[in-house]
Image (tube, rainbow, N blue to C red; front, side):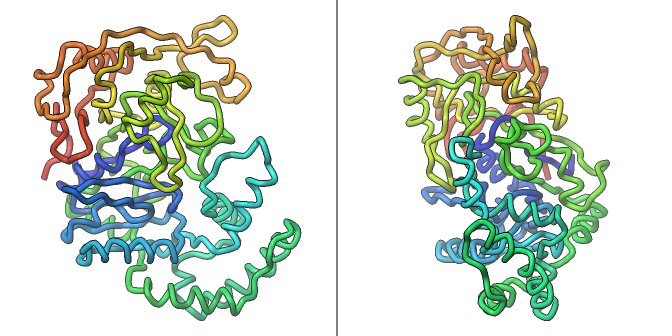
Length: 428
């Protein structure tokens, strides 16, 4: 399998950073296909922790080509700060390619994002206020600015003038500061000069790598339940984090995707507002949050915590075609007195096994649980599945039974080597 897609099978924050870093060791190319600096991956290498927001996880290997594909929205200032932070930690030798079709997050997008959240009051989405949604909105409205525009300064000036004629009216309507063309142009011209050498047609690069049968890892941001089309709308992100979106967002044909790995926490978390059937609002939820360090990579917000929900995972399987699972943060469940797994919902007296399309229905869903025995032994140094406690092995087998997906990787700690491999899925 040469082209591997990594997707979040829940509401994001599943631990994709560790998996993409682990799998990237066998990759020739690592591609980020959607989202912006609203999504974060935390990667631990030795004693050093790295929080990536925009840049692909292959950045630590000088031999890997790292691609920011056309489906992304990019904040040039934030990206340059991220690169600077990496360089301060000694990461200076890398290969980076930015799609000339990726859209640029401008300062007015950030202003509008914050205003929209404020206006919604108690119905706020819970966005990171990074300008992601307004940037995607401008893309759909065909008034966006792309990276190819930005690095061609003559074009950038012209497009910026045309765009601000519209955006300043919107800003005025919202009671926000209007922008001067020269003010933005002078600032973003400097970003353009620093990024120009990275900007290219990344679809052509990927096509050439595919022809050479190179290993390509498409890393996910967020999770299936935050998909704009298939998630818990409107409490979703502004793009699609599913495997189905990868070909469009990377500029390749669907037939070139070989395998999809779903990243699944051993429990469930979500950030922001919206329904969460298995949420734990008690001391157990607090315990899992603290042991699992469940705070946002980007925002540091405490995540909501709940039991593992296999209705959600099965939904992600159907939407993304998940072939195998990577079970993350399994060690966090050690020592818990009672574990439950949700295997179906009851909605208005009927058993269902899918996610309703409306919030009203989903909020009425009652989770149906099975209760499992727990384990007390430390599992953080176990490398072989057969050496896990019987109860831990049973937990994994229950997941496989109710999803029909093999659990091929199990993370029992933050380090790369704290990973149980049951099946190799991405080899050189």
